[in-house]
Image 1 (tube, rainbow, N blue to C red):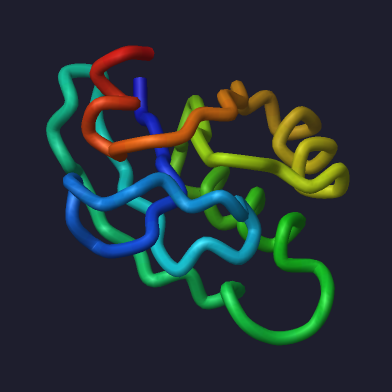
Image 2 (cartoon, rainbow, N blue to C red):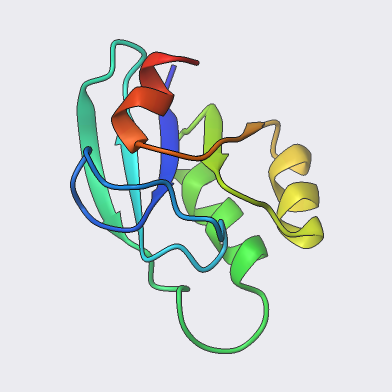
Length: 100
């Protein structure tokens, strides 16, 4: 299972971003908590549609679950359409993955 976490920085000890679509970074982990990839979110700035675009980007990376502080309604819908699980959490990125 691959888990993507919306993050405030590129490090696994960063805080979970409270804005899923506009998170500065996404860290992708395997089920054991190993970081597989760190992604600069190209949709963190700009016009509308960030949630839909981020959902597509993460689905294209074969992510199974997305963790963020808060999801907007459009992003929730886009993630559910793609079959991704959603978890709203706060705190440390690495701890969140280990507690899934």
